[in-house]
Image 1 (cartoon, rainbow, N blue to C red):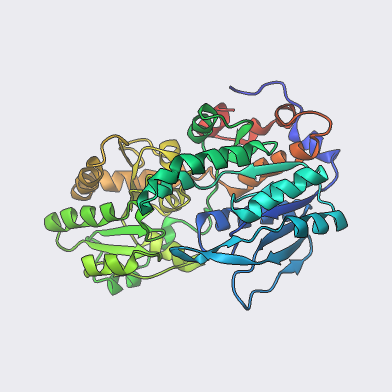
Image 2 (cartoon, rainbow, N blue to C red):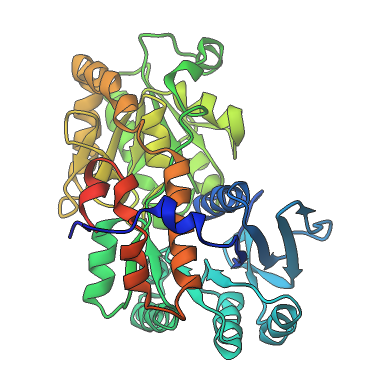
Length: 420
């Protein structure tokens, strides 16, 4: 429903003290994944707004040292590498450490971003100390289980995640559809906080003729692009299927994989014609995006999919299943192509059809970057600040009432503005 008759955010913040916030997460920058990137943006936004942020995270390597600067400091704990994801870690349980840390310097709000042992410890410690807690839901871990022969764990994982988040004052999720889905399975106090995209970085002007030439293509040839982890749960092999079909029709087509993961060697052996460039970040990543033509995103396990708005901002024709970020941002056959979730075979057909219809692809690419120009990170950071402020005032009124008083809806555009 649309919120009406709220007190303005500006009036509220002018009367509110700046807060001390503790963010607990098992992944953080410079790790390269959507969760780490999102949290880095949110922390930067809070610090820029005058809040003090403490990040509690696992040590990422033996040489990893905590960062400390004005308004920001890190506390590192022990962890262990996640099987099949050696570059990511679970934090060890640390409830005693966190209670000691927060007794010494009590945060106004604790935000728990991941649901591993460290996240659970944070929820328990904060509850025992009476500190307001909010959480965010970034990953459909229960859906990953079936991709690794552990489908029997799906129900158990789903139960754990629901119980975990229901111990917090609010769970922030990236889309309205996910919010409704979680609420239908027993989640309480779910609130929508979308994701942003760095328009200054990701844009069509980054397109590089020299990079395309290094791939052996000219301006008339097609480049299919995939950006993300090379892992089974990303439904990655549909990218290969699409490439094979398209290359049969358009032999000069190239496929570029940007990213790394446990299935890289298998993919390389199955498709020696594909170009694998590994993990890219910053301006280099933006250049790779803009130098492609069609972005293939067949994943069915996303809560949002940050790569989708990045690809759209970069001017690519996106082919994606109709859910998560894609269903919110893409109008089918106008600024991208959506594939019915109930028709997996249609993904390859849709990718082939777009590749063979150059006039349609060009029309989509003309419209796509302007269609996501409203997704500025500043507005997402505003939304996160609202949630933090609401939680901090939880002793005076419940989270839902606080959210209404903070007028969160007024800063959203398009579909986001009408769905609270």
